[in-house]
Length: 419
Ligand code: EPZ
Image (tube, rainbow, N blue to C red; front, side, top):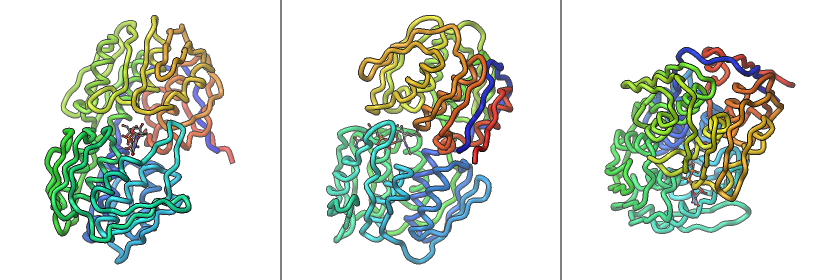
């Protein structure tokens, strides 16, 4: 298994390009199931999750090819209606197969996704919504079997919480439903807006995406599209925090600053110099930073996907900080690993209490999930001496050319292939 080896302490200086958003590209790839016409998607990041999705959609019946960061799809003639366990267990977003297939072929059997390191990851909100849209659902042999015998019909759906995936799944079916669907308490993430932009390009009639009330008027048919994926705001936040941790000076190109407002505000409050332009963000460490408490919230609040990275920064500042995780029930798997670097973190339920330490010392550590992995890399950059990070396949799911980008900024980092 590959590992990443870092010799810490190097300043970060220079500029890098931010890649397209993983969490926008995934639902948009599933949206291609809604049309038989060719589609072209650009700025698609080269990531393991994208490859998994392309393989899955080719299995279901799309013809998809990816060259560099461009994905082209066309229809192969017939869709399978089964999403097998060995594909779904690899990537939770596979559950997004439900919306498009229920809309197109009125049935789909999906292996229950199962939990992951950050929580049980239930899909009750998705299933309750589909039931309201006329879908019969039953669970058998670890599969959720669904059938819309009279087709998908519009409904008023009030989410018990603003689930990103459930909002996407319902959008992906309501666009071809009979009648009007209203989603109340919808997720407002930029990735939802990007998906809705694509669906409207295809001929859908969606208003309100990006707010917590979305109205979708079903249409009979959707056509092909060309679309450029929005920048990855979580990748950008990760590199901004790396610059803060390493007292560096970094320019991020091809970003959308408005998507990062909560993180930028917090970093400015710490004392980091940040200058946002149209599609770039300049970050410079100019003085000792002050710790800032955070509570993770749904967008536009502080993102849960940046919580682990924030913990590394707070662990290396003079003073105390409090981090509250309100989105996932078990998103502190990185704490034990950070303590191996010398971090001083005390847990109490969903709150982490951090006391800054002078410095980390390098250690062998193991990645439990994607964003925890990012935190371990940041810790390794800061630590004195050598850090070896194993199980980096988690990182390859969500960070394109991670070592290359960090090396370009001056980090001493390399990937070691272990057969
Ligand atoms: C998306 O996951 C993202 N993944 C996650 O990013 C992100 O952390 C999450 O949204 C929150 O922003 C993708 O977009 C592919 P949710 P998703 O449904 O859709 C509970 C990353 O690092 N819930 O908004 O699975 C759930 O357990 C990944 O890129 C239910 O209870 O998130 C969680 O506690 C990690 N029932 C909360 O809601 C449901 O039916 C938020 O989940 C669905 C969700």
